[in-house]
Each structure stands twice: as structure tokens, then as C-alpha cells.
Length: 302
Length: 122
Image (cartoon, rainbow over all chains, first blue to last red; front, side, top):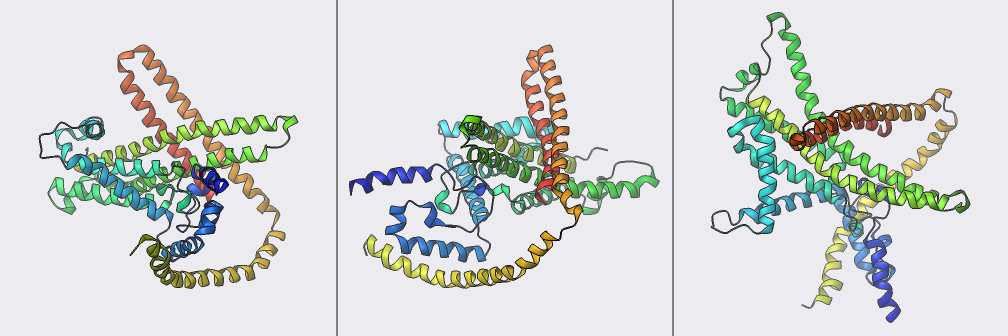
């Protein structure tokens, strides 16, 4: 009994703090994939039926497309709603916001003062909820991929935005929203909005300008999607590659193999810090570009 | 009902129904696996009889990704140099300059990663 009790935290700890393999944070898999490998032996031995049924449930859900990416995307959405709701539920009451409320206020004021006021002026205040949602949602989805102990969710947690499908969905949302807001703010209908998108140039260049503007409007959301996707995917892939050096170089100690392995592990730690920074920066860049496109749609420069 | 009953009887019954659909899904996966196993000899044939030009594919991928990183490193290095010099000239504006530096570096890194994704992951 005692060895089992003592082995439980040890075996739990070894899988608790790491994913099964470094690339599991970006590869899409069904939920609860290979759960019997991830759980410590004590657990999977006693609850064998439950583990097996959970794995089959994960496969069944994957048939409908609910894989790890989709699940963590939904989790990020719920966390975003919680982030804003935790502050907004005392909106009408005269209470001084506590520490958490102060933080939420800091985020929203940062977005309003640094992002929307320089581009849209006072009229930008009505777009703060939109840009704040994009920013917080992408930041939370990116940061969820850096949390190590989702191994029990099936072969590692996941970066929801590490899938092109998710980032293209976000870019399509941004595209539809800034066109819709532009049409609504200009107020003269769709055709006048489209005519406003073309700068004032001599008449014979107008067909070329139409083609250029059309291409720009298609490439900009695509660039948003690919930038976010590539940053998230490449960061995790780089960490996986350098972590692989630790495995490859663990022998050959005379040639400095152990030293290279230790250095690789240290480099992976620093790269993970960089990944945290990149996660927040990419969320900011997405919101920044959405703001720029929004300002171009609402106040087209001639 | 007590928790043990819930966990040991009711929940596995619900999961067994899900498992039936999961078994159907697993059956489809197994069918695809056998199809892939049938096509595996053909794929091995293609690898063995690959033309000499196919050997350059990995070289092309690596070169593309490396050159893209070269361009990005040059661009971001220029941003770093001019922004540090501007901060030295006018330390009052260091907040704005730092923000602009990080933002523009993210754009250039995005361009580099477009090329890396195309080179390595397609």
C-alpha cells in the first residue's frame, strides 16, 4: 500500500508537468488519445474500463470534428467570457474594482488608448469590445498551448491557434466585421462603400486599382491567419527540434554530448519564455491589424 | 445513488453507447489503414524508383527556409539598430520607440514565417 501511495505522486508528477512528446502541442488529435499511456500505471490499472471508454468517447467525438484543437478553442472562448464577465458583473454597482478588476481595466484601457484612439479618435470607443475580444481570445488561446499539464486530455494539450482552420476562422470573422462596420459607419449603402475603397486616381487607372484593392482585401485576412498560425506552429516546432537534441546527444559524453544536451534543455527553457512573449505579441498584432483595417473601412483615406 | 455506483455502472453504460459509435469510427479507421497498407508497396516503389531530381526537394526546402530567416534577421537587425539609436538620442520617447520596435519586428517575423511554412510544411 505504501509503495503505491508513494509512487502515485511520483508517477503523476512525471507526466503531469510535461506533454507526451514536444510536438503534441500543435498536432491535432482526438481527445483522450492514448490515455492509457499518459496515465500512471496505478491509475490506468484500476480504472481500466473508464480509461478505455474515455478513449472511445474521444474517437467518437473526433468523428464530428471535436478534436483537441476545437475543444481548446471552446475552452479559450469560455475563459474569455469569464475574463470579461468577472469584471462586468459589477458594472452598475458602486464598488471599487479589486486587483483583478484593475487588471481587466488595465487591459481594456491599454487597447483603447494605444490602439483605437490613435486610429479612430473618439469614435473608436464603440469598437473597444470588439478589439478587446479579439485580443483576449487570441492571447488566451495562445497561452493555453504553453500549459504543460494537459497530457490527460489526450497526448498533450494544444495550441488552438496552431491550426490553420482556427486562424482562418478568426481572420474571416475579422474580415466580415470590418466590412460590416465600414458599411454601417459610412451609412450610404454597400455600393458607395465599395466606391470609397478606391483612391482618387485618373479614370484610366481605375480598373487596375479595382484589381489591386480586391487583391489587397483578400490577402490581408489571409496574411493575418497565416501570421498567427505560423508563429504558433513554428515556435512549438522549434522547441520540439531543440528538445530533440537533448535526446540525440544524451550519449557520447566524451565528445561533450551531455553538455550539449544540458545546453539544449536550457535553451528550450529560454525559448519557452520567448514563446510566452510571442503569444502576447501575436495577439496584439492581430488586434492592431484589425484596428487598422477597421479604420481604413470606416474612414477611407483618399 | 452513491458515487461509486455512478462511476462504475452508470457512466460506463453511457460511455459504452458512445463506444459503439466509436467502434464504428474505429472500424472506418481500420478500413482506411488496410487501404493504406495496400498502397504501401506502391509508395515504397515510388520511393525506390524516385528520379534524381527528387533528391533536391529537401535541399530546396531547407534553402528556402534558411534564406527567409536570413532576410528576416537582416530586417529585424536594422530595426533594432535604429530604434536603439533613437532611444539614445531621445530617452523620453523610449516607450513609443519600444512599442514600435516590437510591433514592426512582429510583422517582419510574420513574413519570414510565411516563407518557412511554405518551405517546410507543404
